[in-house]
Image (cartoon, rainbow over all chains, first blue to last red; front, side, top):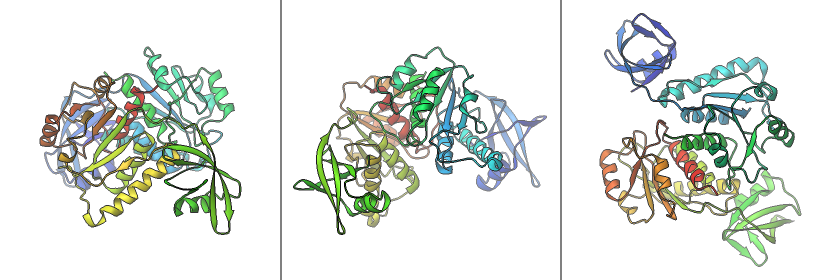
Length: 237
Length: 237
C-alpha cells in the first residue's frame, strides 16, 4: 500500500503536503475510500481517503504493526559528489536503512557547494530521502545535515570505520564482527581516489578504524551501498 | 592505471578495439611510452604505448600479479527491466564480482524485448560490463546471455536461491552460511512486485530456496546489489 509521511494531524485526520496530495490524486489516481498508510511520529496508521471538493481528507483508521528499522543507528559520512551520484547514494542508502548522512568537504572532492544554494540542495536531498523512505516502507526518514568539516564529527560516539584505499589486512567483516555491542556505527566513505593520506591520518587519530573491502574495487557511489548491505547482512535478525 | 581487455595479440603486442584506442588517445590523452594494463586470457600485462602515425602500438612488458576474482561463480538471473535500471544493475553487478547474467522474460516484467533488437541490446550490455570490469580492475568480464526462459536454467548446478516476497523465516544469511561448499551460486531476482506465485512454486520445485532480506524492502535494481554485497561479505577472505 502507498505510504506517506507527515508530522501534522488534526483531530482524527492527517494533513499531508501538497506534493503528496498531488501524488494521491494525479499519480495514483485514488478515489473515495481508497486506503493509504500514513507514518506519524514513527508509527504507521491505516487511513482511508475522502475527496471533498478540491480537498483530500485523510481519515485515521487503525494503527498498524510497523516494520522494525535497523537496530543500530548508522551515520554515513560522504564527500560532495556530482548531483546524480549524490541523489543515487541518498536513495539507495535510505532503502538500506541509513539513519543520518553528513556531507563533508573532503580534500580530493572536486565538487564544491555554493553556499547560497545549500538550503535548496538540502531540501532536495531531504525530499529524495522522504520518497525513498515511503517506497521502502520505513518508519523514519534519514536526516541530511548541512555541509560539515572533519572537526564537526569527531565528538560523535560510536563504532568508527573508514573505507581505506591503503589498508590491506583489516576487512570490513572483521570490523563489523568486532562492534556487536555498539548502538551507533559511523562510516566514512571517500571521493574518487579515496580520502587523502593526511585525512586518513587525522581520522585514525580520532579512533576511526581503516578497513578494506578485500579484492573489490568499487566506484565512489557503490562503496556506501556495499557497506550498508554488509551491515544489514551482519546484523540481520 | 588504465586497464583494457583484449583477446587479440600479435607477437609481443596486443591489439585493442577502436573504442579503446579512441579512449587512450582522445579521452586519456596518453602519449609515447605511457603505460597501460592489458588483460589477455585472464592475465594482466603491463604494457607501454608507442604512437606510430595514426596507429597505437601496445607493447607487452611484464605479466603482473592480478587481483583475485571471487572464489565462487555467481550467476544472476534478472527480469527484463527498463534500460536505465538494466544498465545500472549490469554495471554494479560487475563491480561486485558477478560471473554471468541471464535475463529472463518473467511473468510480471512489463518490459518486452524486441527480438530484432536483441543482438544490439546484448552488445550494449556486454560493453557496459567490459567498461565496468576495466574500471573495477577485474580480470574477467561477466557474460550476458540472450533472453532465456525458466526451463533453460533448471539444468545449471549450484546453490540456488530466489529472492522471495513471501518467505518470512529463511534469511539470505542462513542460506549463504549453508552453502560454503558450493562453487557456484545461482540467484533469481524478480521484477517490481516480485516473481509470481506460480513462478515461485516452479522454482522451488527445481531446488531454488526462497530467502528473505529481513526487514528491508528494496527497489528491483537494489536487490541484486544487496545480494552480491552479501556474498562478497560472507565469503570475504
